[in-house]
Image (cartoon, rainbow, N blue to C red):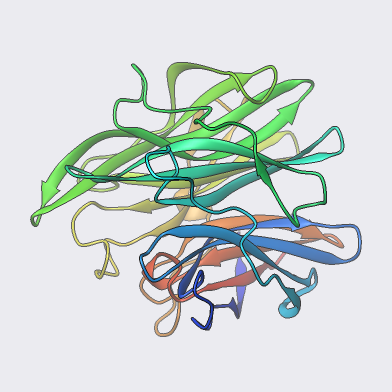
Length: 311
């Protein structure tokens, strides 16, 4: 693939108490009116995340036509599974409702944080959401010992298919607990109750790629294609060589994947907002052209921008 970078779309100004920094893990939802609704996670002064959105022109995402002025999903009450923040992961239109799968955050004494997966539902096309349950629909288990998060969900012939992050271990590196996670697979008949069997789709490679984040799966020409975010465990916050880059894989069945990172086609810029990191991408097609929305430096602290696929 060959991508032409078009620049930064959005970064919070920091004026709102619930949005002091970050526009993280964007998700692009193509609407019927030539607009794309981009959901994102943003942080307050205590680094607690909530979810909001902007609407942009589908053929020119730098043209922002609407910015929502409040969160559509916020952290839960003290002691709940999402009491430290919520981040959007994937949106599914089903039976006239919009379902939001989100990553729920808990602070952790020994490992900095613990993640799980929640679900919320909207009946107004994403203007507001209600959490469906007071607990997570997926959490740590015998197959996922530390945490789970950031799911991608597709529905095919009544089968709900999920690709999600599974943290396998925590190691102390430079006096900081660092997570090692891969991408695994689960299935469901209702989108709520999920069956797992420890099926690894994209695994880490110790010392080369220690974590694989934010799966973005789509099917094209009979092939399952996935963008993901790859990083090392040591130095990834500041070191350009160790920090997140966008990877790519393909599969015939969505379960067995072949890594093809050299085909991702997008690399870090020499300078600017995406010069240290490229990560957490989402993609859509409009008028026959594919667009990629992605984060840059600081895990979304520098905002998100876009690129167009050049044929």
